[in-house]
Length: 392
Picture 1 (spheres, rainbow, N blue to C red):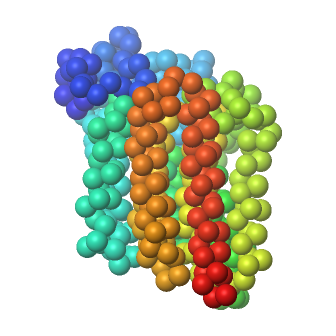
Picture 2: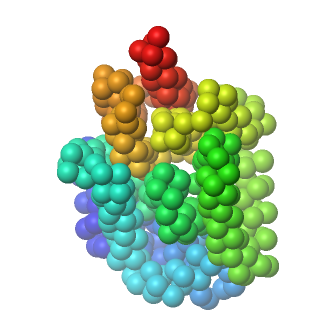
């Protein structure tokens, strides 16, 4: 894949493992030829690479009539991100820029998984299976290879999820600020971030916890708003286009909107907040006991966008260190813990081979995410019942 990006020799067409989706090669135009991009993979990277060349104002990237994207797709990346690309990766030849872009995501994800395991005291026990699972999902499956072939940004979503939950579990502010940075890069992370912060606040055991979590929410919101609206005019154009897409676009890929009314899907984050907050009724408990609920929310929200493909699967590995931490908590039965962690890992592998595992029906693929989320959400309830039974 890397060789094909740099040389355009078509070598990625000879992969032993087939791609989940048909490849999208950059069409041959004067602009793509000039940047050594013609016939290369990395179509989603092209959506920001060419508009960020600096020859046209940033605002033109958000209109199909004026964007310089080879497929005339309006950009779905915020203005500051365009400026950063203009000063960095867009200065490189296309293939090298895309390769650096993908390598940076992979290295950041690997480092963050190790960081999470270390922060949770699980590094020695779980580092090898966690990294092997991530590598397998990304490099040895049709879904993961298609994520790379498209030049996707989706691993930033997993980074945002992991760092936010680390902030809530450890009380460290730097993780909340880093979460805001990575969520800014890929706005698909926002629904989960809103759900996690709201549920964590609702489940606060005392005033101190409530203030800390409210502070995390304020820090995230302030950082995110500063990054977004430092270029206010272009930011408004960007946000308007994004809202219009979610409200009007015909659902594509594995979007839950294909199965449910649009209004019901867009209300899903609110429903998750209400459902997660009900745990408060069972009495105050550490937030770590609700980790499977957060994994369930992240799993079902992978199908939330109106345009949603299963590139999401590799970033869901971000929940594996957190679930391993939950499985080791006192009061969680070892059998339930193992079933939850290994069951989630099995789902990730099955979803990464979506066509082989579930067939060609997109409805079944979408349903598999919903079923996996429902089972995960039941894990804290089963643990609670087991504890109540032991007490009785």
